[in-house]
Length: 173
Image (cartoon, rainbow, N blue to C red; front, side, top):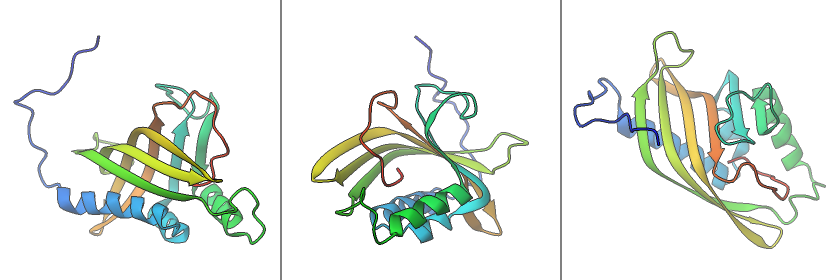
């Protein structure tokens, strides 16, 4: 068993506006729940990625299959397909609600391509083709804070059942 790295004497991260970051992460989740996908995509930087690994502790999306591994252009293509008038896999429309908790925020390591990292526990309840599904896992957001505006450099969703069989996944986590 690996020992925890948290200690009671762990330094408080300075200069991070936790409430602002929390609101940003909650807003991102709400946009997905409300199917405001075009607004959701705008939260991502042009060089951003959205990744849902298909294996526990998967280290790279490049040498193994992933559930999702999208750059911003592929995310836009997926959303355009969801908006198509004759999409059969999303008829009736998928409904969802996401709950995020246990939000942890820390500064990025020096030299990283982002400024801070936020982690949260995710519970997503999805109603798809007359059945309800529950997904649990942990989200990790690598965020940039430029000119007092937050944006997503990378969003990774580690599902606890990532290595099981799934019905078609229509909406992002």
